[in-house]
Length: 166
Image 1 (cartoon, rainbow, N blue to C red):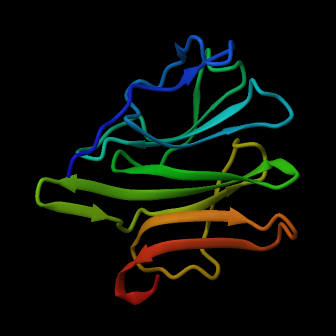
Image 2 (cartoon, rainbow, N blue to C red):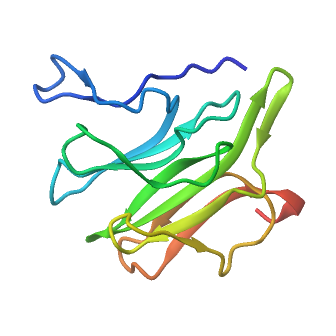
């Protein structure tokens, strides 16, 4: 059950010769980082949080100034972090997020729960809608969400689920 954790987001502007911590030091695990292809100062971070206990620094964070300041744009709870993010190809104002309720214990892993869900924003992260159509209502665990590069109306989701509904 060994699991390391980090202390935030790092940025380099010199090809990796040096890195600067840009915050989110208590986010522990970071599942994904998206950089807006139109403006590299706009960055989204999927913060999973601590695997071992609750934490307030979970969710989706956004910066518009290259990481100098962060705004949490999606928060589910202290027990549910965001594990993955993806843009709609060709339209980075549309963002999908997979939120996973999870907890590790020395004797096992709780990989999912009733707060796990998929979300969509159509306004660059200002507002989020929970996606429910076509997705089983069972408790969900590990997940991934991807938008088709050919047709953005096709969205693929993969997840662990209780009751053989994954």
